[in-house]
Image 1 (cartoon, each protein chain N blue to C red):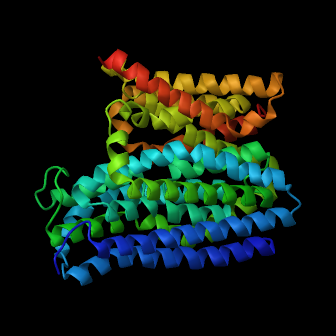
Image 2: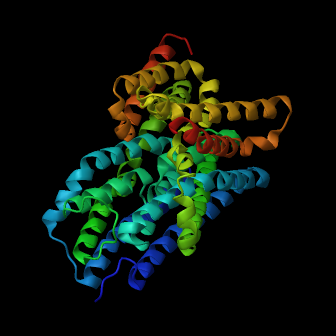
Image 3: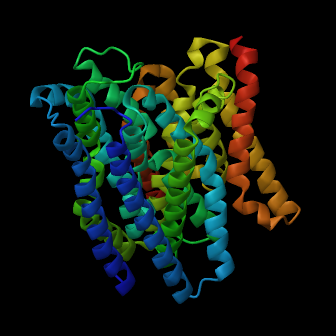
Length: 217
Length: 242
């Protein structure tokens, strides 16, 4: 590992652990300031409704996205969040356009720049929205615009698919057919797409390995 | 202390957290930019990355702002602002807040929460539910990076295929999910049509880049295809759904 990467790892760890403490301090500050500590049972009850799914998604996201985003990109993206809808596509597109590989130092640089830029822009957009809340809220919530935001993922992944599938069509066929068939047969799985990313990744890796061993790719 | 989900105190907490995120992002940006220059990457390439990413980010960022607007009705502005600027995701925060509210017998997050205990419990659930995403990266980084280096050292060609397969596996899942609702009639096809429009616009951009030598378009193609597809959704949905 180069000096830059080693240093990025150390600095990244300091930032992410500081962020973890800061994030935990938010509910602590609320409870202390308002003297409003809730009963543990009510928190646990609420947590039971979300933790099993979202802790699993959390583990999957870390394992799947870390190799793609590089060291700096990972430490920053997991603090700023919204990986699937912004950070991962931003990093992948930037690396593709700059013609660098994800596991090279150039890839590390481009991925970090893309994730940092998109974090700054997202934060600024939300700040503007919060400052102009009474003006922005009715526009964003208008039923006319709702379909645009409801369809943000197909609008994003349609374009991404053309770039990646056209370049790697042999590697794409098996995971694509598998995932389409799976969702056609079991539509209720749509709610757990975060977990199914792992299934897609495993199918893609196994089929690629077989094709590679057979000399098809 | 009188409680309000929109109190000055909560705004101050939000501003501290948001400032932290901004400072971290700027720090990483400057550091990576400098390293890029050291590696001999051109200023034009680095600046292009910043500009095209910034343009691409606006539309999805507005959709995240929508999450703040929706949650603000029950939780006020500061808490959703914090949650959606740090670690969170649109797909996570709403179910987390709803699950926490449900445990207090609140069925829907429609009215402003005025009980500080309920509000605190929701804040705890939203925070604890997302914690693995921030704790695991520093713990697992060494193992994951080690594994990657090992694969690359052993077989560089397979390492490339491995990385591409990771991307494709992720993309396949999000392409597949578009088909989940097509059993519900024509309305269920809308996401698929949106996907097709996005793909078609991207393909046209690709042709323009290659055949007409419009290299500059490369950096905006994903933003353009996304916006065209979202605009298409605005027009097609009332026609199909009635």
